[in-house]
Length: 99
DNA sequence: TATTTGACCAAGA
DNA sequence: ATCTTGGCCAAAT
Image 1 (tube, chains in turn yellow, brown, purple):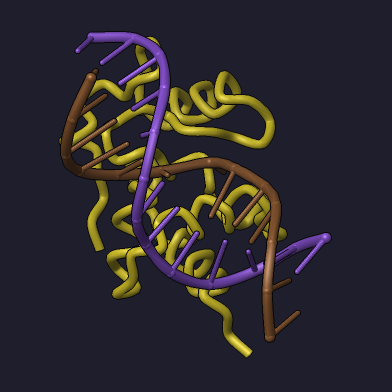
Image 2 (image 1 turned 90 degrees about the horizontal axis):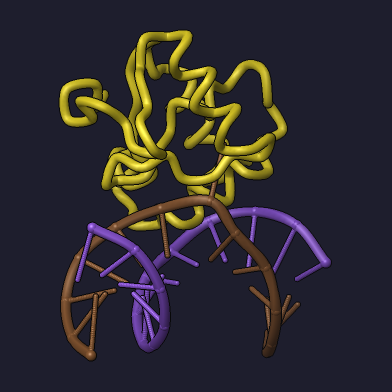
């Protein structure tokens, strides 16, 4: 049985390197408004290494949470060319990936 | 089956 | 600009 979360993870896997998407966009792509449930899915995501959950951020360009700490999330993004300043993504609109 | 829980969001103060 | 509030939806308890 494919749950809502499974779809979210499958979708998240397709986010290209150096780009980010939002919890809202993910939910929208699935014709749903459960952006909150999406956050939940990432938090307890069982496919930790295969799903790039660090590329999913808040709709206003702030980082949002991260299981291993928001700081770690910023570092991972920085390695892919997405710079973060004071918890906010620089050029967010420009790096945002849409489905 | 019912209640609780968030890695959220938009609108007010 | 920051902080609080209420609403939102699927999953886990």
